[in-house]
Length: 197
Image 1 (cartoon, rainbow, N blue to C red):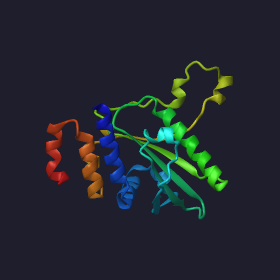
Image 2: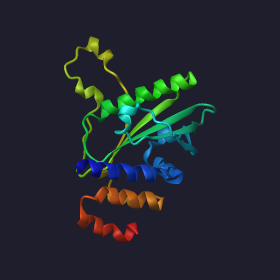
Image 3: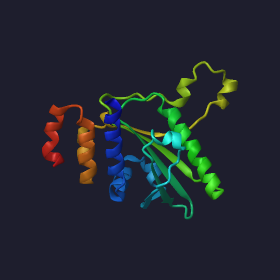
């Protein structure tokens, strides 16, 4: 039953962000401004090819976009992983996606484009995400260079105030995020029904 619930959330997110206008509005609001400063979000194009192997495909929402940058012919990819539950192993999962993505790019294009990983979470409780480096405690300084290092953009919807969501410019982004934020709290969700509609 729990797996079916997760698939419902995954399908909703995938359908929601498959709309180019909604995806662009979402990234305009939730990518750091120092990142969007370098991107032409009007050029956002969802990629239909998976960045992961078939055995990982069932666990991946496959939300990947390619976007032009302000540096001419240079492009960047945005990879979004969605979670409706806390998954401590997600940082290893996303490391695998990054490796698969870069390997696939290299095989197909003989060059690689930057992939920016984004984790979007809207579970019932706030999540203090454990970063990859935090799993390696007590490693001697001489050996720390062998720990894989990457950063990601993490959005915990429970940590975003309702007032901030209500200020969003795009109506469908605002409505969907209010529903996602309060889906487990029917009383609170009822308070927002008028605004959502």
